[in-house]
Image (cartoon, rainbow, N blue to C red; front, side, top):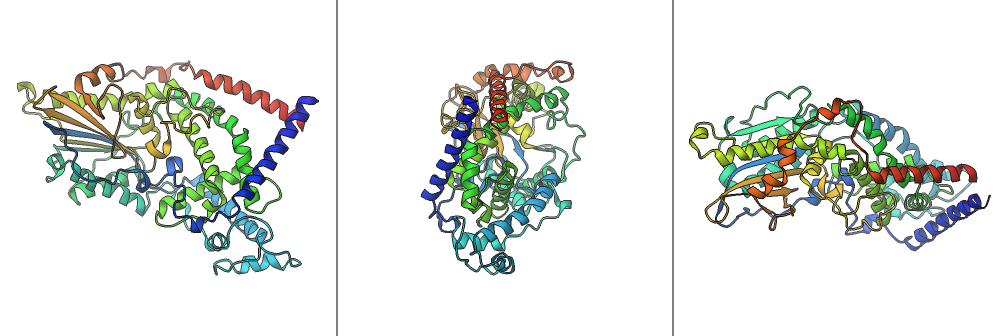
Length: 496
């Protein structure tokens, strides 16, 4: 009995604290915020995170020989299932929020709120903490994406890749400021409209309309290796345990309570409703970067950081270091890159003189594959694993999908030939910013060091484990987390 009572008292205290924090932030108005929080995990606008410096990247006594790049799709629409949920949930929720914001005048207020939607009229306040400007923006909001456009690239997504190509051309004029040749430039993309359109937009940014893209490889082992691995698909279900624990933890409970109170509800909204508001917030912002999404006004900056961490947990365990299967699966593109650079190293020799490697290799895939490749390279790896219980400790974590896995995320590696020091070196760029790789100097890696560091991924890339009956061991943190979740759920059932 006592553990159950203590749990109930703790829950009440969390809600009370959340309401107190909401009152402290009652004056916050998104429409008046000159520097709103714009980091939304995998749906972060690329415009927000890329390096805006466009000067050529010069490496003393070195010249670029070739560039290899892997990118995810640009800004896209949600999948069909998410679109259906947004259409079913948000308009009724929108009406309820607007009704919460008007005076109770015998039932007329709610009707007036619905009738005035779209006019931007301020309402007398009864419940909730949204400012008049944010309420007016919410009243004008409507979703205008049909289901047949699910997972399609948007106009902003085309711009993401086209301008990326133009900037890359300015940074590497020795390689890319030339006419297109099929033998010198290789393009490849995973199946799907958004990856195809992303590749087309990028190719057009480099060479106008000169490039005729090849057809995608069916069940591509280089760009869709995760989907071809039954062991990974089976193990992925366990990856969500850490997220489930976080969703019933203190940070998320406080966020749900604050959001509900801020929107004028006398009860806590469901996790699904809060998640859908956040989904719409981040999609809206990515689609129209210069505009604010009214759904973002439901969240304070602290709330958005909680939602971002939840998304990071999803990606960490589904596609990255949280599961060793993810790290092992990321080897095919690493092997391809290393093989390409080996050819570039040897291209001066007689045996390779007649068949030099392409000057540029450009791949377009899904964000899951990109994350797995980054894990295989050791990029953005934290010394302490991300867990449901250590969000505060991970405030300055390296693994943030907002920075490494946004819309149009990309990793470019440039192979240099040098006249002084070591003959060949490699520089990595993530979202057009230099990557600090272990054992490298300011992002510039010795080719010999890189071959040693990535030898296992490049030379021992064996995915036979995908088709065995067993799977690779899951992370120890998830085993402990699952036990903690079971204990907490049992306590909650006892309290009920």
